[in-house]
Image (cartoon, rainbow, N blue to C red):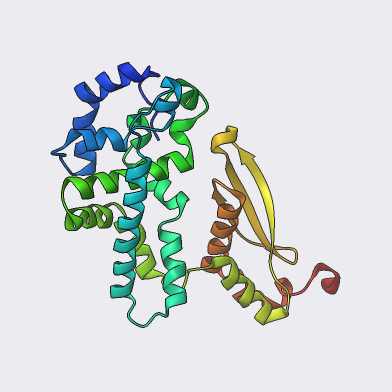
Length: 261
């Protein structure tokens, strides 16, 4: 995500918001607000009110509403596009699509972090890059669009912003639980599951990137990175499933190191 232009006080942020920031963001959103106050509310982090020590209209209520709209849109999409899938599989697919990490990615694509109004303390601690903050802001934007227009418009916005990941789901509908799928595959070959080893963890505490390698016996099957160890393990399992190295050399990689000696 590009660096934001300045660290501003709340009063300066509000002037910056009304004078310069709204229109570029609306262009990125592909939506022009009739009620500018809704967009301002969607972009206001709770820390603004905390620093002023008084009630301030922040984006938490809009996040609550936007979460419900997002859940419905994604649920409807999955129900329509996977008529043969059972409820359990659809639930797992939905959880993947509306996860905090997934929503953070969408928020970063819109540069929402640079447009948020937040207190000095929150900003100095990395608030503009925090996963929960960006995910909440994305859902708040959805809630604001819904209130400013209607469900159909909010639905169009969601499907437009999530199109790439939705297309990936259509291409790989079985890739719901990569770690579970990889373990089942490998144990079916040699009764031995994979192991995960963290290779590195870089970046500041609030925005670390983890790199994990998945191994089977002594053989490396794949690597993945993510903003949590769990996310990196999932990506490593997904990489292993794509490469399928065990299919090329089952006998060597399907045995523990002791058995191969």
